[in-house]
Length: 316
Image 1 (cartoon, rainbow, N blue to C red):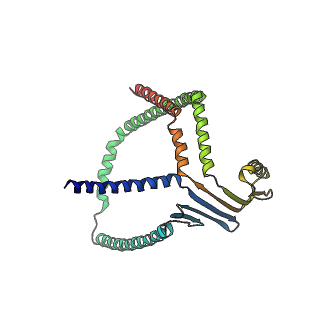
Image 2: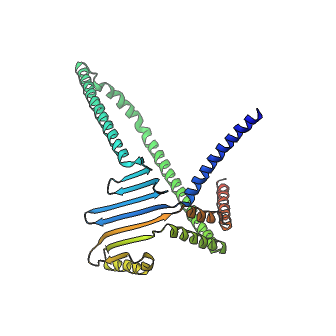
Image 3: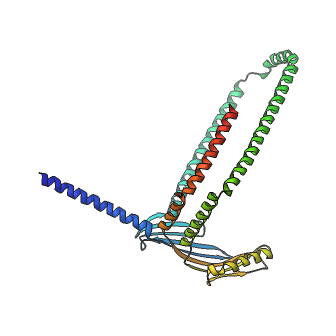
């Protein structure tokens, strides 16, 4: 009996270890296996075309987004289509058409019912109606009685309305003054906080980590042939000067031709590269778990709690 129990526990343990091993392998694949992407785009006088493709794990998961309008997003798992926005939009359009047809039918029925009600009301009026002149004398008597007290009530209403507007204006001015005062106090606090060496070192470190993330996801291959012209020639010259400074980083396959005679943006673009999730996570985690960030957050929390206490005191 004990041997059977041990054998069952052994089998259960092996199954659990196999499941954990599969989950660990999937986690490692997600973290370290890169996602490859490719971008194709063309801008011509007749329109814009763009196509973005991405695949992961030797094409096991493939994503494609194509433009022009209305655009389509397709997700495939191996040979199966997991998501297709074009089919979803088609189904939504059919449901909208059905809803519109139902609404139009309901509106037609309501209009026919309204016509029947109007016919009934006209028949009742023709058969017999009570003259409306019987209440004129009573209304005149009530008006004569209220002429004496009307001026006094109007004066009280006018005074109360002016007083309410005055109090509202006073309250608005006080709130505006408090806001301006709080803005200046916050500006002074944040200025002193940015002048601290701890904050400056944290910002430099965060900027370094962001640059590493951008470097890891930048296109490895970049080709472009673009004709650019701004509304004014000086702006075109500024953009072309920036392009000249970035030429070593963009590579020899990136061409920008300036056009100083017209406003234009035409050309072709091709870019490809890969993204690794581990690189993004590790650089983000190194900033989030940095001791200097915790110190900065404590100071911000202390400042906000002090402001809330002051606000509570003023309200009391």
